[in-house]
Amino acid sequence: MPDSIVDEIRAELSALEDPKARAVNERHGDAHGVNLSKLRALAKSAGMSTDLARALWATDDVAAQLVGLLVAKPRELSADEIDAMLRSTRSAKAHDWLVNYIAKKSPLAEELRLRWMDDPDADARAAAWSLTSVRVQKKPEGLDLDAVLERIERELRDAPSREQWAMNETLAYIGIHHPALRERAVAIGERLQVLSDYPVPPNCTSPFAPAWIAEMVRRQG
Image (cartoon, rainbow, N blue to C red; front, top):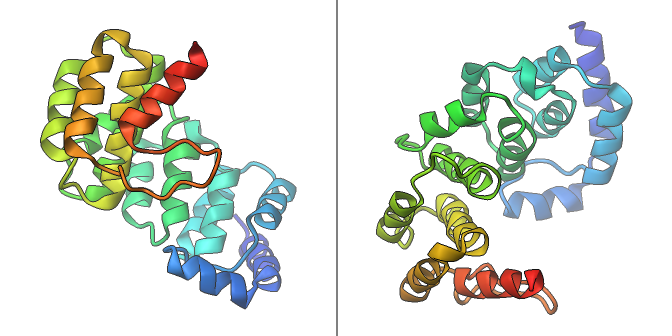
């Protein structure tokens, strides 16, 4: 991948940098100040290229890495590459995009889920829980949901925030998509009270699992 292409993209990102946006983003764990709509447009104009994605990731520049995640083809990245990318993320947004745009769409998603589920790193475990949520919704066959609920009940309350959020999502999805386990999922949420006081704007669904489950089931109605 010619360095000139990477340099050109970084120059365009630098021109898009907004100091006020950076100040806001940095408070949320994202060291960049580029409007995401403009960043997406730049990625679209660059075109899909996993080699370019690798080169952009290697810059260790958050905005460039976000572009890289948008231009990468998940099937062309090995499990070891995705694992290394996850462990080198310095940005909350990069972590989220890596999980949602790469890991979840990779044919190696289940391998990664199993690799990360008992990892010493909480961010890796958070990624595993996000992948587990996908299994719960789309391919629960072979997944021991009773064991998953037992682990959630044991670990959810004291989990680090990112892992807690992802684990709570899995709890809610079990309650939403598996009626036989709904009562148990709700009971776990009620007992632990995780995210029960999370501020929610009007007309938005609470992430508190019992409320989330009830609202989604109502909509399925």
